[in-house]
Length: 444
Image (cartoon, rainbow, N blue to C red):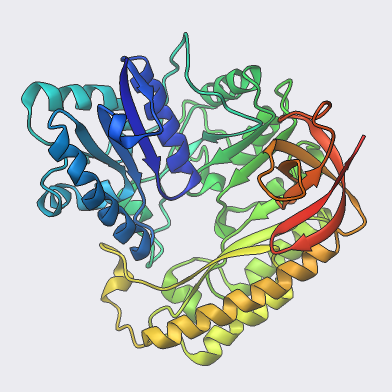
């Protein structure tokens, strides 16, 4: 068989898209290799959400160029959000590249690779599909994919929120949901192949089912339907938007035992003026109200968020408001960034009055605060038993296995290798907390 080398940057949706391309290519005669120099086809699935990720990808492209020089028949392609954003410009910067495909080109990967071979010219495919919903047709028969204990399922793509800093609507397009029956079918298939935990994915999962489906299905109804699938032990979802997070979702956390007690809910800033400038469509007070209601219903809820510091025009006191909010909510974990302008977004044209040195200093203060909050939350687990879904053997010294608890903490623990395997649910007594990682011992 021919060999394909696949590499992925960015979010979990990109991971799922890469898996989909691997499956489609497998059925057309490709098998995945871990060595780029052995490949007949190299595909890099890209991210453009931050400038740093973009620069990494261009650097990687330049590093792959010698492989094309050694093997002229090698097809080198870039897919995903940066490919969508750059289009023809990607080829202008990297003329040795053969294939540039946006996220909507994933389902067409085999045809596009064949087109490169037949025409012997670069191919760019960045138009958005015109269908009103989102389809991932099933492929029956043999598969190279082994889902593992935790696996991802895309349920919606795109975003209609158009936050001023965010490139996603321009790289992923408008919101499109998959039919609920198709999602259920995929989850059943993954469970039959060994998956025990499913993570439902979307840029804004709470917007699922609002339009384009044969029958509108709200997100909370999808949760109940997926939770009823036999053999599934845990259910998660990401990412949510505060504007669309409903009381019905809070009720689902109470009602569904397998819907684990963790929520990733990006806040971005703790100041209302900045939130308005960001076009986030929620206030700090509304965000706090959601969290307080959720914690009342589910006291042991684990919370994580996204935070941007140094947004254009952010004053020192407005930045301090973000630190105050972090202290109030006490997030387990945060994904923290200093603002960088992204192409096509309204914010790239805003006067950026915050010097880079100030952005860096604010980011460091945010990171230090989150480290303190994470340690405080982690130490609460010490001496307690937690249920851990085993993902794999651990590479950490003094630990045999690694997995996650319900609140999405990584857990490394000792245990009997004769009795414990990936996919098992194991009770672990927590003995230590370090960063967003717990350590302990398995108990039978």
